[in-house]
Length: 483
Ligand code: PLP
Image (cartoon, rainbow, N blue to C red; front, side, top):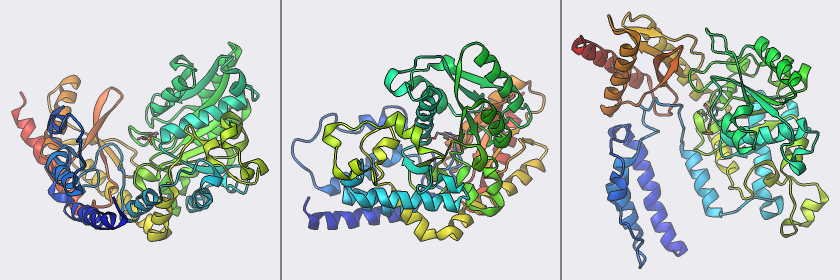
């Protein structure tokens, strides 16, 4: 494709995206295709001869769009939001256009140095501690996902817990990792990848009301495990759990970690970015004093297209100790001087995209005030929705709901718990099949709850209100059919 052809098709693509975003409300939120349907509509063999780019766009519309779930739809309330935005899309396009691979400072100095600036900016915007900044002992780095951030944190924690020997000698002792039933599954995955195995993952009790980690039980478990010969490597506290946005008490957990010399990772994948609002800075309580590492996902709620997780560490030395390898083919003068950052040493893969461009574009386009406005809108809409649910005797609200996620369950009069849960899931299927919204569910104390996560850029009050009215209507209609 010549630059002139690229210009022509590039304009078509940008127009296509602009039309798509402008008309996104007209699509059913959740794709309704059956497994295999999209694959069956595509040729099984690659073309022998090249085709005009228009054919790709035509097939995108005709074949692929029915198989797309529209994450930017104003009725998307599933999982957590995965925000896209104009500046992030354009920043990503520029990154693709430049086509650089920023594994080393020397392979594109601007790729590294912009990333350093942007993660330091974000630390400042979120009110994170000075020692997370790159000109201090720590530093931030963009990872593809929170799962990678947790894995990298665990590798650094193991390095420190093993006195710097794990990188060379492997997992020579029974290292353990502490989570709760509410911690994201990526922590167990990280333990498996690191060779610790799922058996190394120790479950700390949660408070049955708040679902937050019980620091007293953590203290007991650490003491018991150490007495039994284990080496506690890392505790993961979550600020904003995936299921219900429960908040682990980081200061109390941090105190226990400090007593025992155990690495504290704070996973704030969804909630962390909300600290851009000063009134939500309490989300960072304990982070400055106790966290060895901390991660949050601008790709969830901060208007930055997937993928973009930022991981900060209070001390980069264990991270670099765990992951640095310098083969001859990567040697270069800048690395040898030690005066540059080589982000390949801060992550699992060697190669890396120029992700900082999209985060930079987002922060510059919206400014701190624009980012705050976006978060505040989600929090305010969630609060209003929670008020409607609490006032309706046909529903039970799950408390607390500090951010954009509201969990609740419909009441099914006269039905025992198991059948009620089945009815709740049936209601969710009906709502999702309607095309106007997409909800997901979770289980708390054995009961199914519906999750409504508000935070898509296009979601306004009218969308939440309409969705709530539809939930009430469908609940009444389904109730009427039950015995
Ligand atoms: N941690 C928490 C608390 C999450 O909620 C999630 C995803 O929802 C993750 C980790 C995993 O995120 P990612 O998809 O970036 O790996």
